[in-house]
Every structure is written in structure tokens, then in C-alpha cells.
Image 1: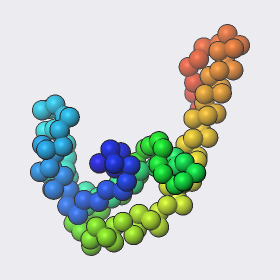
Image 2 (image 1 turned 60 degrees about the horizontal axis):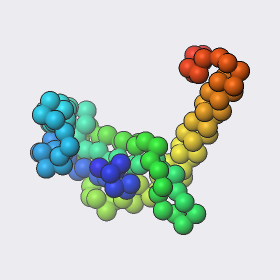
Image 3 (image 1 turned 120 degrees about the horizontal axis):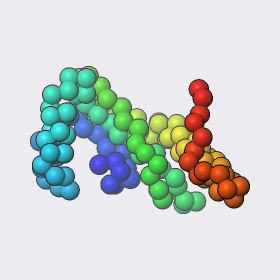
Image 4 (image 1 turned 45 degrees about the vertical axis):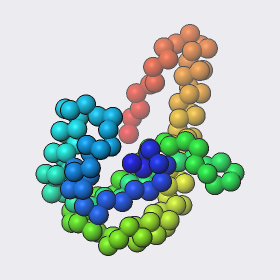
Length: 131
């Protein structure tokens, strides 16, 4: 949901996600069954806050989603209410902004490396990285 709306999404109970997956649409039967089983049966994920990692324009509007940071809890109602979850999401803003910058810089560096390798006549596959 956080990707579709470009806004934080809070599920007080992941069982609600399993129940609601039918009306969200866009999933084939096999994918829907996997989602439902995961959110219904997974005891490690009972509530969930999904925070989009976005790039913003100068007016503060999200322009692109790089990914989603999902925070799971092993009990329902970990943040108590949607209002508290959204306040927590606001506190995460600097972290999400930093993650977006890091991801953007990483992808720009990867693109520059591919272009340099292409110009040099080398394979455009990224080189393996060592930890």
C-alpha cells in the first residue's frame, strides 16, 4: 500500500491484510494465496508499518519510490493506533531521506560505471563487490 499511495501505511493487525487482499486486486490466485498465508500464519509479523523511501521535489512532494522500509512487530497494535503510527513515521523522515540519498547515489554510481565500461568496450554487467 505504501508504494501505491507514496505514503506510510500501518496495519494494526496483519490478519487484516490477509482478509483485505481480495479487494486490493491485481494478484493472481497463487500470489493471493501466498500473501494470505504469510500474513495470516506468520507469528513474527502481527502488526506492520510500511514507510516509502522516496525522492522529493523542492515542494516536498514525493516524486519516485526507491523502496519501502517495513517495520514488523510480533504482536498486534505495536504502535497503538494509526495516528501514533503516522507520528512515528514522521520521526523516521530524516532516516528515510538519508536512505533515499544513499540509494540514489549508489544507483548513479552503478550507472556511471556501466557507461564507462560500455565506452571502454567491456561487459556492462556490474562487477562483483567484495564485502
